[in-house]
Length: 191
Image (cartoon, rainbow, N blue to C red; front, side):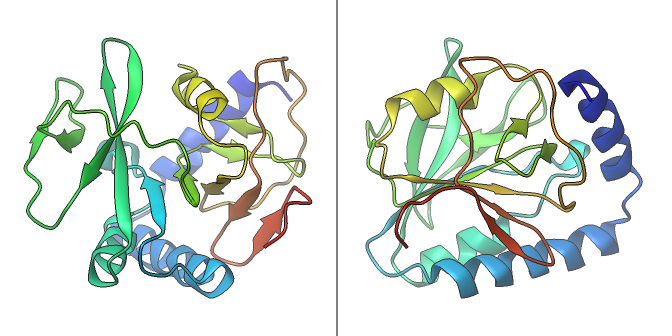
């Protein structure tokens, strides 16, 4: 199946989730992430702020946990068509942009490239770590610039069930996928 087909199917599947299901599944994904990766103080984690209208996974659970454990948190922000990484703190000010996405007021790129984990939004991920996002390519560009040792981790409500047919040379695969039921590894990177 092609990316465009996956995008349509999984947007619809996600749209059919209730707020209670989103909350429950997000908590299970969070628990699986914490149990598997065991993040610790001073690690650097890049994580997306969910787009509520797209019913993305509630990453606020992750952010609250990271803040309480002195884990350094960075979130994406699009500035001049480029995804930058803004460090956030408990007192960081946020605003809603033109697309209805909450983002830090600051446009200061942290210029950090050696993240321990990059928690990545997606609509679908196959058994080889190929991801389907919204089709803008921001994360593929971002992945090209970060350290090769950074673990790229997709989070999704749904497990893989079919392969993506139209992979292209600039697509960068994920290292892991965390779902409500399991953590899949796609790489031979040491834990």
